[in-house]
Length: 366
Ligand SMILES: NC(=O)c1ccc[n+]([C@@H]2O[C@H](COP(=O)([O-])OP(=O)(O)OC[C@H]3O[C@@H](n4cnc5c(N)ncnc54)[C@H](O)[C@@H]3O)[C@@H](O)[C@H]2O)c1
Ligand SMILES: [Zn+2]
Ligand SMILES: [Zn+2]
Image (cartoon, rainbow, N blue to C red; front, top):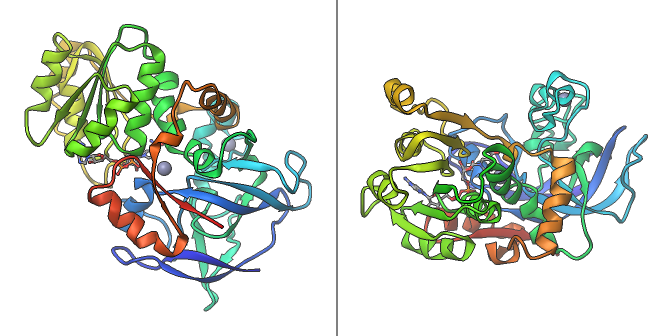
């Protein structure tokens, strides 16, 4: 079928919003009518060449929509179901899946940019195959995704909220709850308070952290962060963020979350920890970027550095749980959505996250 999609042909080039050919779902795959797609920085990393994907590509990995049709053998969803799309649909039988880490599925990584049979369903009008980001590719009216990537969604949440649960909410809240396991009374610093960092803040609040310091370089983002649990804010351009966090937390934070994506902010996270503290790296730093961390700082302070992917969540189990917390008002997702765009406005949507935009932009489909 012919569908409108935003195609990225080359790094540092705008998206081309054009008609592409989408094949029908094969065995174990599902055709989704996309309802909403979030404007996450991970797509921007590909556009800037800070992360690599085969090009041309249809990006978009923070999505939700309605099942339109199912391929052979699909039993878990049916046409008409509303679903959150997981950007790590998992195979169920690799080492990571078998060891209870489906968000790190090896088979998903092996077939990156393609569906599980290592082929693409998306083709340009000129006949070139397009990569599917995260086996989601939701910067398009329709998407073909693996059945395992379809997570049943509650009826009460709208598509922008469900889309955000598909990446930033699960990533941020999961980083605090499932990876760090923040405890009541802990002190937390969050570096980078965009779509993901705001969810780390509200995850830390949900866990009962008492001192929650938001660190960013935009005063607008810091003011917004107060609505999501920040008890203190620090502008890293205006003051020494490490010294300020150490002062606010009585010698260093129990946890520092890096939620921007760079070597410099990774070092900052390690330096603002107290002894025995843990730096949790959530951001995707550009390939080749490094952090100048002195090993002796780790030794003498018994500090830990860890990464977290997809909030270390079990997407199929934890996304419905997170959606339930949203329904119960324990997490605010509607308040994160500050900008809405049509797909044709995608280049403006990405320009906005680099300027003054706070919260999350969402592409909404008619
Ligand atoms: N681990 C995962 O599974 C996962 C999932 C989604 C996104 N990510 C990554 O998380 C990062 C954040 O994504 P996002 O969508 O929230 O981005 P965003 O653009 O919405 O927010 C980034 C924030 O960082 C701030 N910032 C910029 N430079 C900074 C600095 N030097 N110090 C402190 N703050 C700074 C910006 O002002 C902005 O508020 C990206 O690298 C993204 O790729 C990781
Ligand atoms: Zn994302
Ligand atoms: Zn697997």
